[in-house]
Structure formats: structure tokens, C-alpha cells
Length: 271
Image (cartoon, rainbow, N blue to C red; front, side, top):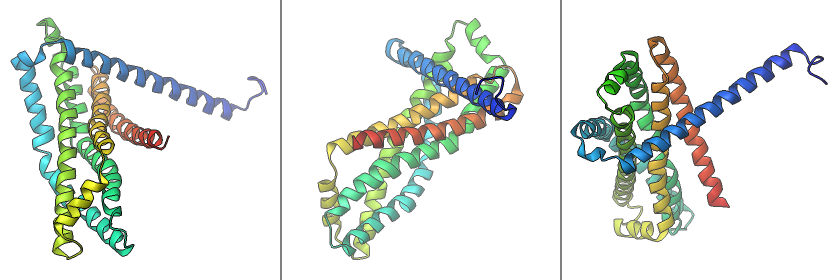
């Protein structure tokens, strides 16, 4: 079937599919360029010696990490501790105590913790970051910075990347420690097993590779999310009406990216 004989509805969907593919390629290319430029700034620029940049880093760390800590503790004590307790009960019912450490490492440490923190940060800070950056560009603050010889990427974007990714790693580790500790105490309080035996099984079931994967996921998911959020915030340009559009696109794109990265890592682990 040639192009002339194709039905109009098919041509319409092919056109939409092609447009969507081109937009996706453009989005990925922009994020990759942004990531490479910010990484070069982090490596080569003496940003840590600049009070203005460090002020933004500390402010973003407070907003993302300190203010998000109560939510992390709440989720760790509820979702995390409950998952740990159910794993203990499940393993005891199967009369397979060594399964406890393995399940906690693979379910809580490698999946629940990094995914929960990534989604928490995205839900708390995602719209705020896009809106804040979009508003700055609408007001022309980027032009003001450039007129003073200040790098927009170093002053506005790099601090957010550093704070968001760093807080993601710290909060992920905090989630794991609190969830395991609270779950172990709950299991001991309910006479499922002693806290000593519980911690012993945790040590037996966790290896160095799983700890390394936790660190990778704890940084990678927030890193990918903040790049997408900042890219969409910058794309707002001078039109304030585009802020909600790009904020929605940023959240959805970040969610899909996190899920794709998680699936890719799982596939690599199987191979």
C-alpha cells in the first residue's frame, strides 16, 4: 500500500506517532546536553568557593532534604517497617529463616526504598522546581544574571542538581536504616524473633553488590528526575501560561523515566 492509497486515519496516526518520536528524541537530547554541561561545571568550576552558589545549594538542601525528612521517617515507619515485619512472618511460616535477609535486601533495600524516595521527592519538589525556574525565566532573571557575568547553569541549575541528588541518596539510606530497625524492633516485640537473630539474618542476606546497587539507585533516580524537571522549567521561556504544561510534562516524564531505569537495572541484574 503506497502513501496515496493509505486511509486518512492511518496517515493521521502515523503523523502523530512520528511527531511524538521526534519530540521524545529532542527531549532526551536536551536532557543529555544539560547533564553533560552540569557535570563539567561540577568537575571543573570552583563553585564551592562561591558564596552565592553555596547559598543556593544549602537552601535547596534544606527544602529537599531537611523538610522532607519527616515524610521519609513516616514512610519508613509505616510502609518500610510493615514490609519488614511481614517478611519476617512470611519466612517463619515457611520455616525458612535465612530467607529474611535475602527478601529484605531484594525487596526493601533494592526496590521499595529507592522507588519510594524518588516518588516522594518528585511529589514534594517536582512542581515547585519547574514553577520556580519557569517563573525566573518569565521574569527575565536569567538575562539579569548573564548581564552580570553569572552563569545561569552554575548559579540556578547546578545547585539544584547537587542538592536534589545528594538528598535523594541520604534519604534513601535513612529510609532503609529506619525501616529495618523499626521492623526488627516490631518483630522482637511481637515475639516473632529476637532482635539479635534478626540483625544476624540481615547481615547474612545482604552483600556488597546489593549495597552498591542501593547507592546507585539512590542517586540515579533523583539525578534523572531533577534533570528532567530543570529542563522543562527552562523550556517555559517567557510565557507564564506554559508553566503548568511543562510542570505536568516534567512529572509524567520523570515517573516514566524512573520506571524505565528500574526495569533496565532489573534486566541487567538478570543477565
